[in-house]
View 1 (tube, rainbow, N blue to C red):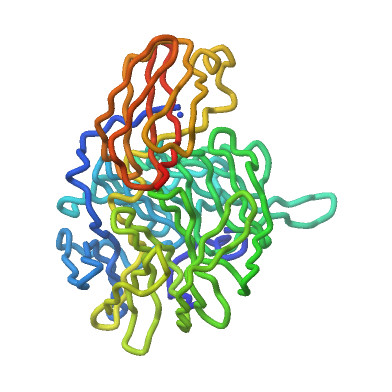
View 2 (cartoon, rainbow, N blue to C red):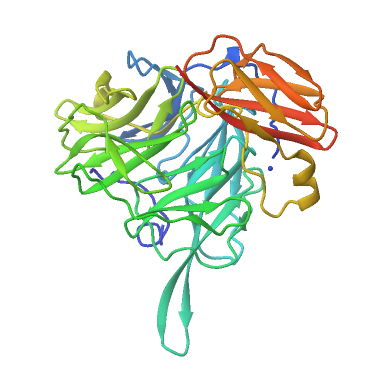
Length: 418
């Protein structure tokens, strides 16, 4: 792993709704466009760019030098407002994806005047950025300092950080990245050898399995969530990058993909997944310089490799279609019980093949089927005490069925069989 010369807040190394999204973009506007920060070392400068990950062609967005330092623990790409936001020192800089102009530049506003906000990631299911707020608490009785870390959100228009966790969820974290499962509404990070999931609704611990790699490996790093198959992928490390792997968030078990990579390192600035083409992207420092590598989510093989020119870096990259228009499938546990009962659905079979039966107390007003990248599919449905849905021919994979009625709406996660 290579640590780049970056600006990280003082504690960074030690501690570091069901709602439907309304948006102005259509699916046809999204693709595998990759946005990030082009950082040159001499002289030190940071510029906003778009890159074609297959060819390496880098296109400046705007023509200004934005800053000289960045916090590489996180970044936010909002595909609905066409904005990209990162932390420059103690301020949030938000840029237009269209022309690179500065949308806002606000100071990070901490709840206790001190602390840090790191390891942040944008959640496409509620258009909010979440991360870890950390502070050091001094115990006057014992004369000791204790790390206190909680899930928090940040308003990118004001810089205000809002604490969500009622108590501390950890005292430290591993700089291996963070992901959000927008369907479960859970934020994941790694701490003390565990994949800790935090409930976004209330900031408490949702799951906490120990990470194990039965096939062999020292750690699971640089992980990213793929909405297309609802799976987390990351790098299995053993004397360098051994292979791409996927982790079961419930058990912590890591399964390697078959291709052995044997790469010397990875550059610690997180990873991004192209859900349309099924590619995991990360960077490695190779003999010819910083190299952006694309790995197949099928077998972990290298499907693209481009070198960042002139000895520079390409940091904090995100893809605009990543989890675009994702919907929560788990309701807020604090939601009123009667409302949950009114919209509660029982359904089957799941996995499905050509049809689905749904038992619902209320007649639906709308039924929609869509996939992980926002494509909608025509379906036919009828209702007579029970909802009957006939599906078109669909590819194998994950789909979401949204059913609206007088009490609200509910989204069901379905799995299409062969």
